[in-house]
Image (cartoon, rainbow, N blue to C red):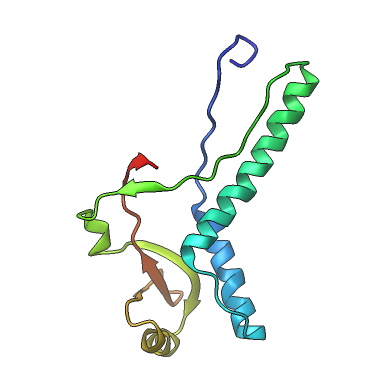
Length: 136
């Protein structure tokens, strides 16, 4: 498509990578006492990291094909509806598995966090995953 003169936008998801970043943060907190990284920062971090990898791959491929085009990575935010039902009933499991006792202890520190039993493997935090309605 690029060879035919089209400008192209490539988008990507990052759910599992955000979970991985959150888990790294939890481990760093447990092992060394480092501050935990907020979930939104994990999302921005993965956007940049994945975007950079895509940007490098596209830049390299365009150079191989002698196509003189620039590639850029853009970190985005999305607008969601404050009335999205996912805010009331979060469904997206993130991060580590915990025992019931661990989950209850974490709720004392973070009373707004919600935990569910996940696949018989323990309890996990769930967060809203509202439908994007606009890119900011």
